[in-house]
Amino acid sequence: MGRLKRRTQQCSDDGISIDDEVGWTDEDEAEQLFLVLTKNMKALKHSKCPLVN
Image (tube, rainbow, N blue to C red; front, top):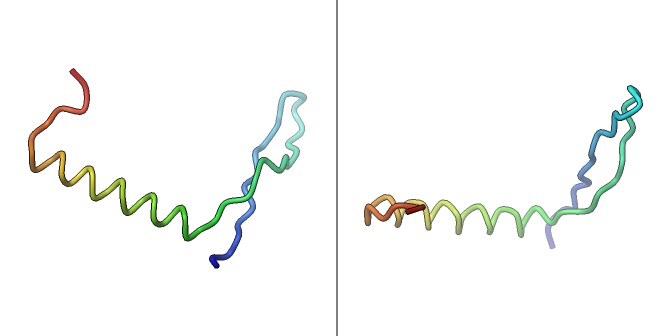
């Protein structure tokens, strides 16, 4: 299983930065999603399909 990584969000509505834990991410899952995204982008580039009409 991949290493879990903490994501934090900076809250500064009162001028003071506060770490707010917003969730945990699985680095292996993120890597797989990135690989699928880049593969799909390459396929779209080669087929000359527009992303939007």
